[in-house]
Image (cartoon, rainbow, N blue to C red; front, side):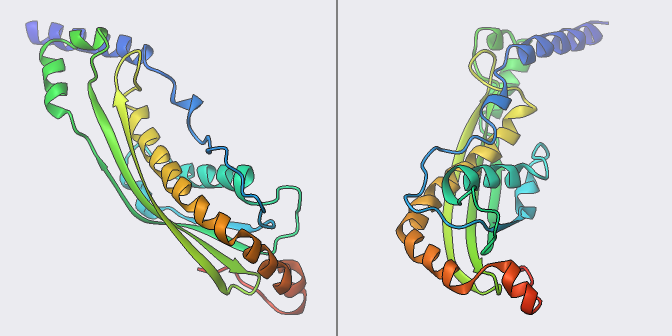
Length: 216
C-alpha cells in the first residue's frame, strides 16, 4: 500500500512539474538572424539526418525544418523560384548524453520536492557535426562546409524544459549551433558561389536538354 501511494505521489508531482516547464515550441526551429551579404540563388534541398535519430525524442523532419528555416532566413534568395542547383545537409556525427543522473535519483528519493523549488532534474547534452554540400544543376560538387554544434538543455520546473521536450530541443539547438559555424564560411565564398551557379545555369534548362539527377 505504501509503495502504491509513493508511486501515485510521484506521478502527481511529475505532472505538476511538467505543467510548470517552459514550452519548447518557442525556441524550436528559430534560426539565428544573420543573413549573407550576397544570398545564393534558390536551390533544391536535400537532408540526410539518419545519424540524428539517435534520440528517441527527435522527430524525423526536425533537421529539415531547422535547415530550411536557416536557408530561407539567411542563405538563399526566397524571391526566386528558379533553382540553380542543390544544397544538402549531411549529419556526419550525432551523440547525446545525460549528466546529472545522481541528481535525478536524489529527486526521486525525495519525491521530487527539490524540483518544486526549481532545482533541475538533469540535463540533455547533444553534439552534432554537420556538413552543407553545394552542387550545381549537373550534380557537380561546388563546395563542402562543416561545423560542429553543442547544446545543453536543463530539465527543470520554471526555468527548464520537460523530460519529453528536452532531448528533442537539445538535438535541434546543437544543429543550429553547427549551422552557425557554417554560415561564416559560406559568407566568404558567397559571391563566387553565386556567380558559379549563374554561369552553370538552372536545373530546369539542363533538364530540358538532358536528364539531371540530384546528388546522393
